[in-house]
Length: 509
Image 1 (cartoon, one colour):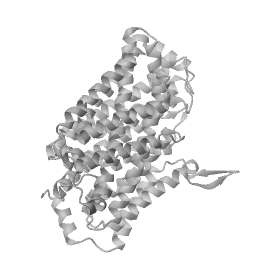
Image 2 (cartoon, helix red, strand yellow):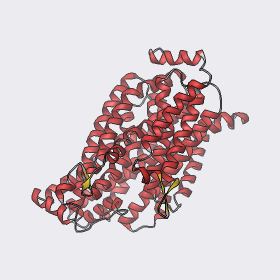
Image 3 (cartoon, helix red, strand yellow):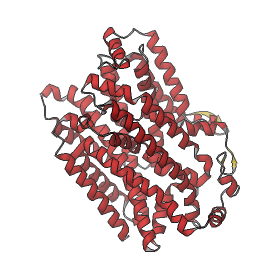
Image 4 (cartoon, one colour):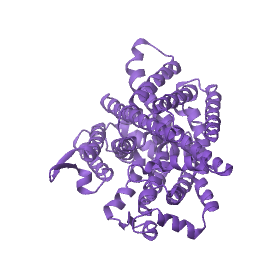
């Protein structure tokens, strides 16, 4: 337990030091929201990937591989391809729009400027963004509290309060500037944590002993099927299951945190080199997370975590390492630090996004302007305090946090992904198509996963269970079609909007 205390103190101390140093450099709305567009390429690239993909890297993929074998590793390919796709097709154009429009701090602000006057589209976008950022942040706080409680035995409610307080203090101090600086450190901690278990197993197992340990852990079909990328739980993987895993790559297109990173880029060189940092980090992290997922199976034996408990693989591994010799205790501290780094990065990102959207899209232009309030930084910090309070309250809702995180990511990505991509490459797209596509994507993804429409004997089942297909691909396809059809059936955009599109396309700022 001493190692956990030391790891926590060191990590929180570094976090607060970064926040305090950032506090001296944050004086304007621009600096708090997007860092005045002077963040380095490594900060933008690493922060974007870790703050949005950390859950996949550290929890979702290794938990799936631990339980069912390498057949759950196809998600890695989808996420890697999606990462290359967005950095080369989205980052440059969003950067140019941001520079052209100057004060664009969020996706709702971007839509409001991209498609001309009108409140419905930016307000609708803002409400979707705020709701799902709050829900995701609350679920992340709850899940981290559960993991830490499993290791330390502390009360989850108390842990949730501590987590929210630390994150709130960091955001109020330094905003975007502090978050991207800290994420550069977090990325190094995460890579170190992912490499830790392979190193530990090298000292514990020989190659044949490792295979025997995997076999003894009663993997379905034996070790050969467990280590086969075309089998899940010993059976042959279906084409739909491969499509479902690969489709997670589409989700990256609609992550609000990544969009803000692109809007914060000030130079083409930053986008170019930031993409390289992002791709390299993602490649390394995904490779080691799949390897670690297999090794956790052998390392934790004779403990065998079944379905619905497999997400505890990390906390159980840390607990086991803490009971071993000093070198292994230190490895447990590194794993725990990686856990903190991933969750703090994602929670900071979600709360910061909700705060920025609430203030810049809803409060400042539609509420505070009437009272001529111009103290943006103070008002932003008050908004962050209220946002964090809402997150803390939501964290007590008794729902599976992993289900909430994954479902929220799908819904918000289905809402924003096709809209953002088409807005960058379609000259004919208008605000009517964007609004219709956004609502369609979010609603369809939600109903596909949670709506019960069909009878299977005496029980109702949802579309995901009926078809075997996750909502990601159908929602993206339907949202894209709705945007195109509605845009062509409604009035064309103005000549000014067309000129902006041509300027961005031709790199005329």
